[in-house]
Image (tube, rainbow, N blue to C red):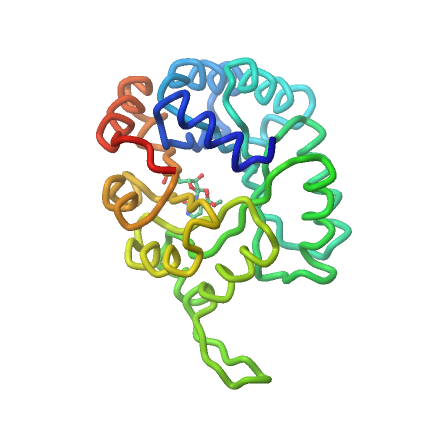
Length: 254
Ligand code: O7M
């Protein structure tokens, strides 16, 4: 099963479009225990878990991150490694190989490095291992405009486009499993959804703490919502996850 089908199935089974961003602070004691505890407590209200380097660095891949990924899979929760891979091809491939080896179902990469000698080897590896690749397309922070939002001119045709329009089209051409567009820019979600149609899922981070609105992002065209602090920093993460899940729960339209 390809990643986009895996998460779609999970979303249907759980009745949730929420991807938990498990960004715990590294000063917290017993980090792995706490990560697993939160994951178990919210399992009924999330369709996937996203782990980033903030957690991987203090935990270490072996054995801790591997244990966490294994636990997620035991709970039937797909796992996404938010590595924002952004280097030359051979190191991109090596980075992805390490994350796939501990069991991650998908990896997040940056399209700025391009295809040839950039993301091509990573995509090839992901296909070989039946894992997913998600691409950043417009980030949630203000400075996203300086990169993803800049206007660029095609040197051959002279046509001007926004960087995010180009990335959205590349994501289709490269056969990515989904793209990331910040919930703090619902107008960008609308525009990008027009470009990708129903060919790609849109994952939208920045809900809650960063100011993005869950329902508004879904109406704009997001498929999944990536939510971190407003769930795991709350006194009762399970109730918080349930709250976000129920607030946006309409009949699944994926
Ligand atoms: O809900 P938060 O604000 O606590 O966490 C948001 C998560 O989404 C956090 O894990 C970020 O790394 C991630 N994220 C953004 O906040 N903005 C982006 O533009 C992109 C991401 C992301 O997930 O990129 C893959």
